[in-house]
Image 1: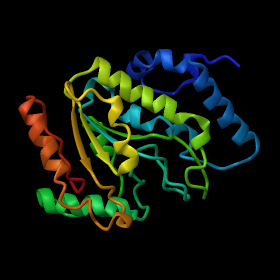
Image 2: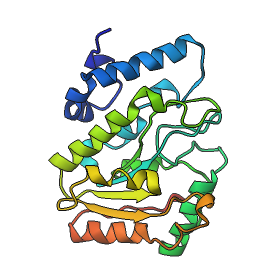
Image 3: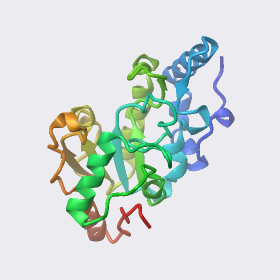
Length: 229
């Protein structure tokens, strides 16, 4: 099986930026694992057209902030290709609710009545999961696909070729990606995972105001974190 770039549904700027990765043997393995799962009639989240949604909603030229997640939600109707985000009308997951609570404490932003973070993505916040697909009702089930090779390469390439990006690393899984980032060129903000399992240690990190302070110092537009407007 040969990979052709025209078959990969991702923004042209990202497609050009990552073209060498799409031609790597590991990416062929991801594609074959995905096709095999479909052939076995397994249900995969997010829907195929949303696999690269994080890239499609955040053009490379707009990129300012990266929020790293682990893998997509595995329950029906939740995964939409953006880390921590769920579509309109879907119950807000506990981790996202804690993110909203921190927003309220940090910037006095009222808790949103929905979980769709697309507004952040369109402002330059790449909501990137390390693993880009999952089998229904089986968390971390696509770890063996090799998605981490791809997303690690994305982080490394951004670190090498861009400057002044802000990486928000929440929880140990995300913090373990720190070695991929040049701290002389970029900014890293670390905190506990927003999951309630972390005993609310995420609360008080003030990452949203800190991010905007950094953006202001770089003479970039700040992020409007308010999802209610």
